[in-house]
Length: 205
Image 1 (tube, rainbow, N blue to C red):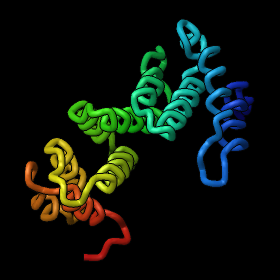
Image 2 (image 1 turned 90 degrees about the vertical axis):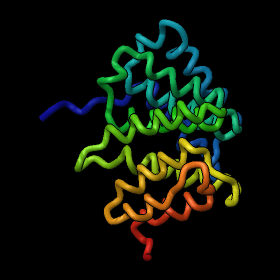
Image 3 (image 1 turned 30 degrees about the vertical axis):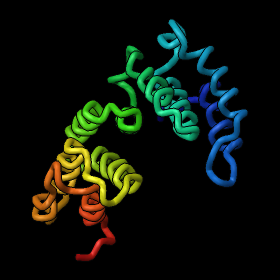
C-alpha cells in the first residue's frame, strides 16, 4: 500500500487562507491577500517557481486569481493564473487542476477585453474533453452562462462568443437545432443565455 503523502507547508497555509479565513459571504478578507502575497514572494517569484512543486504552484496561482477577481482586477488575475504555465512540470500536473486554471485564464482574458484570445483558450479547453471526461465542456459552459448573464440581454453578442456558444450547445445531445439558431453578429447575449440554459439537466423544452 503506497505511503500517504504528508501535506506540504504551502498546502497547510493555503488551507488556512481558503477555509479558515473565508467569510460568511464566501469572500476572503484583506488579510488573505497579505498572507497569499508572502507565500507568492517566497515560492513563486523568480527562480523560486522551479523549486516549488507544481501542485503547490497551482494552489497559489488559483488563490491569487480568486483574490484578484474578487476585487475586479482581472489583469492581475490573468498574470497570477498564467504564472503556473511557466512551471517545468505544468503539463505533467493534475489534469483537472490544470483545466480549471485554463478556464481561469480564459475568463480573466475575457474580462480585460482580450476576447479573441479568451475564446481561443476556451476552444482549446473544449478539445481536451473525452467521452468520460466532460469537465472541459462543463467549465466552458459555466463561464459562458456567467458571461452572458452579466451583459445586457438586448446587446448583440460578440461574434466569437456566439460561435463558441453554438459549439458548446451543439455538443449537448439533442441541441443541434438550438445551436443552429444562433446567428453570430445578430444573436444577443439574452439569446445566447437562453440557448445555453437549454443544455442544463433540469431544462425542459
